[in-house]
View 1 (cartoon, helix red, strand yellow):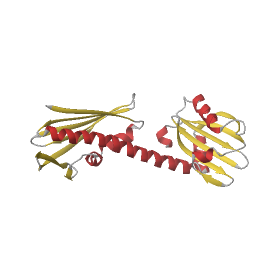
View 2 (tube, helix red, strand yellow):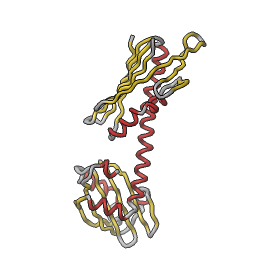
View 3 (spheres, rainbow, N blue to C red):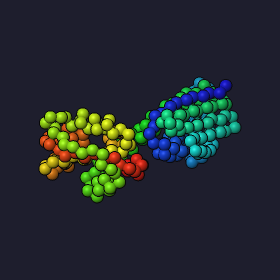
Length: 246
């Protein structure tokens, strides 16, 4: 009998996803019952009879193609294949894990746990990386040289005034994003005599935020909501690829 398990993960970044899934260390970290490993081998513990354990050793070979990655685990008695495919149109990573050989019952539990771990650990690192990138972009928005470069590679698509006493800033920004949703990178800046805000959106998602209130600098949405007064607002559509900005 052949064991086959599948899983899907949403993604927006094929390049970083491919690097993560091609790294054998990330794959090995997701394998339960691991008792030893090297770059090309893993050792697993399975219960063979009542309380007796058996150590299974597998040799790992990996291959990367245009839109897929394959990791194979092989020994004399069994064979497993982890196939990761990337669908750019659907923005989906598909995982397929198959196994044939001895200890099917024990290995089925191990492989089920491995698939769960792959999804959990990938999403955890993705979230951590996004948070790090967002923090980095927010700090860059404090730099006039970075802002100048951002504006120089953009075109001005909107300019107006915002009175936060009459219109809340959140629906105002949301309306701008909806209005100019055809642009993947949008930079929004606003200022008055005492306060400044700078926002960077990529595919509608906030990637960087900088707020200056009476000479104090902040990098959070909470401070953005505290802004009061009449602001001169400019909206720019950046002409670079998202990967060149973030």
